[in-house]
Image 1 (cartoon, one colour):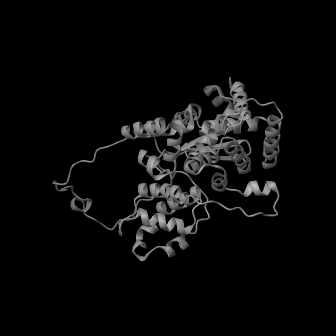
Image 2 (cartoon, rainbow, N blue to C red):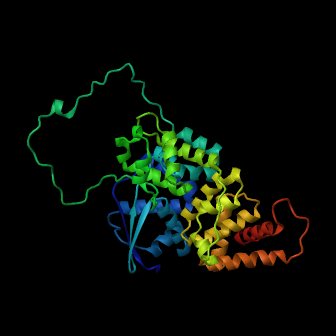
Length: 386
């Protein structure tokens, strides 16, 4: 990207006070202040009809940002489905998307789980209290509201046609995951009592695909989870679906067996999934949290999955099967990228070099389950950030 390149911003509707509340309290802990500032700046720029086209250099000056930081922050906004980016040569178009509601963010997508891993359960409960609402007590009341046809006479009229794009909210669909989940096979295995019209709901299908992807569940796992989350023939409870998925993963605790293949080391690492790595290297009682952190690391950083796989294996191996906080993992990833690691092969070679270089140094008394060199390595990264 050239700093002199132009961009235009489009948005379908204005943001409400509730939207800004969700952005500030729920999205911002995941985005960080810089990405949040980019989104709000984009929003105010799009309100200025006179300023239809702007250069990136002006944006960088407004925000006091370098291009590399801007690209990284933009990718975070894209990953959290707040903007879409389109490019043609040196021209860019940014389409701002409205945030999810608090309910959608916390209970209908995987974002709520990511937020909990980022700020902790206690802080999350504080936020949930902020967004709580009371339902009106209408049990003893009768709805006397008039319907449209009670006041207006229907005539044979054609619907109004407008040839222009009009303002109007397009609902944010949350995280998009391309999945290989066999939904038809899933439906076939469900008991007859659960084969209801609820299964036609696209939102339900997407939720099931996301759960299957995150936890690497097969169809039989998903059938069991759906049965446990469903009550009789009523519509499935999405909160129960997410809870039962986590519960099923924790109760399953399967030992993964990896067959030997003739593939190269690079191929094996590239084809490995976070689930396989976590199952092999993480402690059993830590696997749920480790899998969530691993998926978050993949989602927030647009790099080859093989690079992240190598880092996951290295850290889990040398941290006694416990995967640290997402901030810790991103410090390691950024350090590797700054050192020029761009491919899975680069990552494998660097990991081998890193371990061997620290092994050659004279060691003091080792801590139980955690090598001294890992602490030294993290201290060096911390010193570089000062």
